[in-house]
Amino acid sequence: MTPIAGGMAGELREAAAAVRRQTQTLAEPLSALARRLIRQRPRVIVTCARGSSAHAATFGKHLFERHLGVPVAAAALNIASVYRRSLDLRDQMLLVISQSGRSDDLIETAAMARAAGAITAAIVNDLTSPLAQTVEIVLPLAAGPELSVAATKSFVASLAALLQLVATWTGDAAMAAACARLPNRLAEAGELDWSPAIEPLARATSMVAVGRGPTLAIAREAALKLKETCDLHAEAFSAAEFRHGPIALVSSAYPILALAPTDESAVGLAKLVADLRRKGAHVFVTAPGSARRGRRLPVLDCDHPDADAICLIQSFYAFLVRLAAHRGTDVDRPRHLQKVTRTR
Image (cartoon, rainbow, N blue to C red):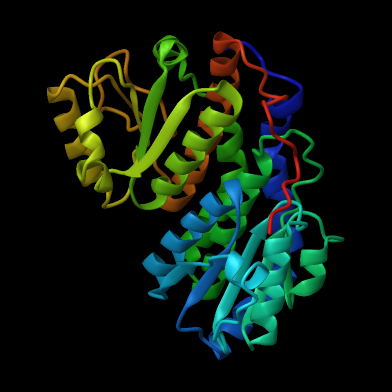
């Protein structure tokens, strides 16, 4: 494969080192937060995030509900920042995820929740940010400077931090071991060759990414990045939700990227892929052995289903750089975007 370097391409290759560095940085605050959550177990977790960080929150929702049985809801941020309404969050948990920690609506929601008696924590890269000063417990991303407008290593680091949080909270030894193996696996995942999908997607005007379970967040992030860096309209759906209406769009001119999980939810996605192929869809699948020759996108051997999903986005990011080059777009200068987006 042709080496990639500089800008977004260079930063995504730093993700493995960031996750390795993060393990030590997170150890103390994660232990403190886990002790608090075990002692004062919340009945509900509310997540607070925008953009790619919101997709990380989707991954967190899967982890918290799947492994802890705690329901998770996404905060409507304008309730605090625009309508100035306080929510009854006493003894519940608010988890904010942000690279910059400087968006006003995130900060104001965190301040509202803390004043209401919630356990407040933030996964944040900039430890000098107003957000880091607002919450009780700061979980450092330790991703280092990320200058590219399109976030890559900070997103991967957010997913890794969430996985470490759940492993620590639950005491899951298998998950903790998968976290330890993750940096090396990320480095390997970034070298996988997804070139069979480049030409079809370079010609596309619209497409869909589908996922299920731990890969729904990956599908959402993939769709956003295709918009941001390739000027390609892409939408994301769960494999189940896609059957409730969007499947009517399927045609041979409408490519579908199926990001397959490696847990029990893989069965439903595989059934959807088979159905889509019968309908004449052009489907690319990441699961090994489940796609026709030329439409199979390689993945690493299965390790842990949730860690496997994190490796999947790393492979996608490496593919994205090459796809943007074929479409003639500049991944480092997306149209109309800036690195820090401040909203209320």
